[in-house]
Image (cartoon, rainbow, N blue to C red; front, side, top):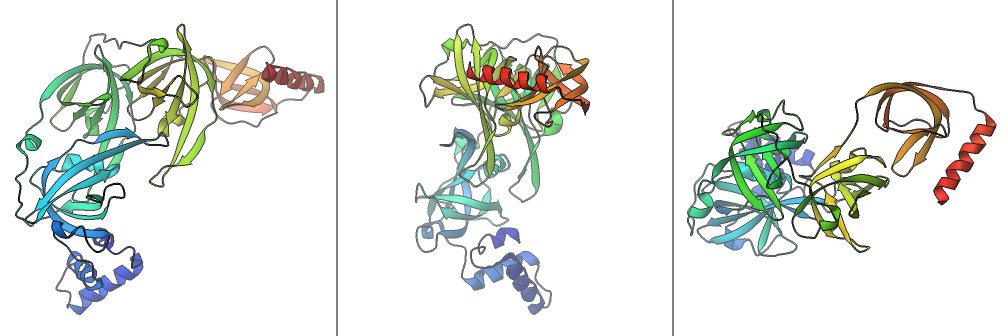
Length: 430
């Protein structure tokens, strides 16, 4: 029902659409099912399936059937606002012609479920950038068969080559859910991997395959679909694939910051010099996202890095040693190069063993973080505590990070407070 409602959501509310479907079912003596009733309601309103040759006239919203002639692989790109996007294409045909259908974000992920030769029912709008393209709003596999001028491309329908891949696991993302072509939910997870040839992004369409793997493990992925998506390497695994841990110690090569150019991908290690505050923005498709930038330096120089989306939520603190894997580079707005760290990238902070501490000091806010300072030492706090308070914290420290387990306020000495404020102002001015 949601599929057919997409055809008329600019004309009816969801409640009105459901009411008309119920009336249609009752009027037919309960002899038709809900999808059939929904299609009848859509037809009565004036929205009907059209042939591909009729997609260039009339309404900007269309519903049509077509056979998949060719399909592209999902491609990652950088939006103007810096956020990462995902796009894929289908060449669809019937007995009247062919049209290119554009799939964005989650729908591009669902392309894994579509094969050349499938017949699809598609709801879409003309693309704003190219009037000859149709942007898919919804699509699903159809049970009917249609004639098509062209046969599915032998190149597009051929089975991609599968190989084994020995790599080090650098990071494993969260499991993401998408809608398959039949409307049922599917799952995928992204894994950042690296080896002697560099780093890459591995898309796993069966998350149970990588369940239990941890960052740092050296593994052999069997039956991997390999592809080159400029500028990044990309791999894909599915139910036919498997993973085995191996004893080899696989090293991932790193680039010096001074050697970074605007071509290819880079992995660098350096010391964090500054971290900005988290900023939120709305992407072009209307979804909220986040961005945060930082400075990282090694012996050869420093570079500005920009964290996008989920990567911007990761905790980073000045003075820590950070390794950034599989990042792209581009000219910065203020000159020089900058690293773009988003989908497919990985961040690894070098941390010493954890130890229990009791620490007393004042909580102070800084750009992108807060810390507790006693005038001689400081810890960066991983959780928010009231600023300007003199407190005693008990918790676990890892390097410069402190995870409080409990805290309490302590008496304030006006002289100490005044001295702390003067020292902080002096630091900010230098």
